[in-house]
Amino acid sequence: MAELLIISSLMMLLALVLYLCIGWPILSTLELPSIAANLHNLHDHLAGVLAASGHTVMARGTAATSSIRFFITCDPENVRHIFTSNHGNYPKGHEFAEIFDIMAGVSFTLDGEPYLRLRAKMLSILGDPRLVASMAASCLDKVRDGVLPFLARVATAGAPFDMQDLTGRLMFDVTSMAVFGVHPGYLSPGPDMPPAHAAAAMDTVMEVGLIRHAVPASWWKSMRRLNIGPERRLAAAHRVLHGFVVAAPRRRRRRLLQTTAIAYMVAGRDTIGTTLPWFFYNLAVNPRVVSGIREELKPIAASRRAASPSPSPSNGDRTTTVMFSPEDTKPLVYLQAALFETLRLYPPGHMERKTAVADDVMPSGHEVRAGDAVLISLYSMGRMESLWGKDCREYRPERWLTGGDGGGSGGAQLRHVPSHKFLAFNSGARMCPGKSIAVMLMKTIAAAVVWNFDV
Image (cartoon, rainbow, N blue to C red; front, side):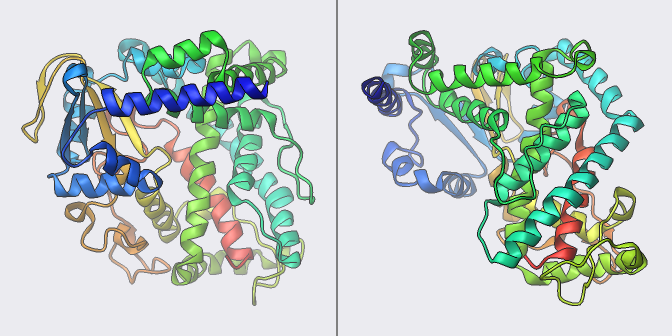
């Protein structure tokens, strides 16, 4: 087994080297030495390249692979063209569907009319007040009985913990309740968290998906046939996820196909589970934002204090644990601005990929040919001076507000930013149907943690 792992690892390394040296697009600003030197910082490096290149670059293959072409952009006008004005010409494409084959036939991989029909169904499901109320109640229960006791314990002990693991477990439990009506119990307030096999399998699906993007399809398909390397891990992850879905109550299985259920689970867990750790990190290094959020929460907490169940450590003069319902947090614009500012700088998906169906000319003047891969860098869009100002790399929620006096809202309103400039929830026909639910859940979790604990 050890020899097999070594051989598969060497094959993967060889594949990557050959692909980068022979088949990867060559640009004056993105040559192999530059890529290799910035692998640890690739998204920031790409943001710098795009900023210096008018926000768009064309990548062409070498003489051996002249058919390979990549169009890479963060230009909002190009984004609007790709996602709205001419969106029919830019599907995700067959190759993308192959890469994420575990979610074949669902909105994540579908294009055209099949996608639009499924999207209409998803909007109906996610707009059901009963589902929204169920998710809100489940989230409140898990925060009150799981997250806050866990944080109280580690705060008292002064113990380090993995915030992304915590939020991932929380959202897996919440989403499982909404999709299947079952409670897997991955989040525990105790010192020992239970194994989270299905959640780990989801991580494997996304990690191997990234690897599949990075190497030629013939390489990962060969590894899949041989059942070696990352493809062996992916096959095991598929078995775990399908087993988890099959174990769900029959009444829910009849209404949700396995692939659809898995797609809902990934969407529900990964977006919030990766955003909240960055949110809390930003608060840890920007204490003034914590003060602004608490100013918004103070009037609500004052009315709740008498009903608070227990004392909470590490919360200064906030002497009792307070929970905040979705109705409480819905009007809190500074809290939402702080979350949107996190999504601007650290979007859950750093890159979007499309495929051009027919030749086209972008608003930037670049010509795109049929079959070209189109990459949109969300990470770079959040760091464009022309969009966000010279302080675009700073974490400043106030940029999302109009009127009022900034922190704590003070009569301010949330500033509307068009989706082709703020792509965290996608745009056009691909606009996230669960956006309002995601914002509701993030505000509920964030408010409870920020009020009851010092970050």
